[in-house]
Amino acid sequence: MSDYKIPAQTRIGHVHLKVANLERALAFYQGLLGFELTTLYGDQAAFISAGGYHHHIGLNTWHSKDMPPASPEGVGLYHTAIVYPTRRDLAAVFARIREAGYPLTGASDHGVSEALYLDDTDGNGVELYWDRPKEEWPHHPDGSLHMYTRRLDLADLLAELDLPI
Image (cartoon, rainbow, N blue to C red):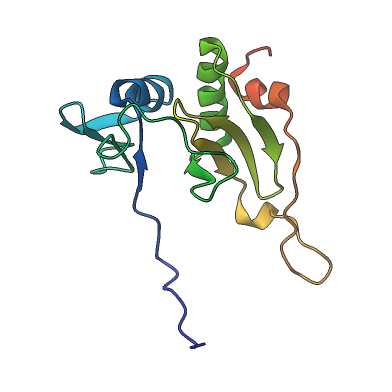
């Protein structure tokens, strides 16, 4: 194995998902989560973004139109993780999801971050989270990162917006 290390500034540019129904997928990603539509290719593909980027998520039906979701037991994408800039932003999207009656599949405090989990309309896992400031990340006595999974206090999250749960 070589000593090569990927540059620290490297980032994931976008995720491109196969979906069964483009309109239904846009209702989730654009309508519920608030992504902006940047390009639409009829009823076959769409590119969506946050903040005017060309696209963070691609959606297409090229090989998946009207197909069933992938098996949860098979190989493939576990989830797409979307990072929100602040805890208040995560609280705001949680309030939208809650108001829409859209089901969460989980809500966790990972020490380094707080996360909400749900499935999109095609059964693809989606994680919505914010990172705590790096200086607040927990560490083991040996200095290694101590990530964990604990229940996220959703009432405390909504308190960012002064809303009851």
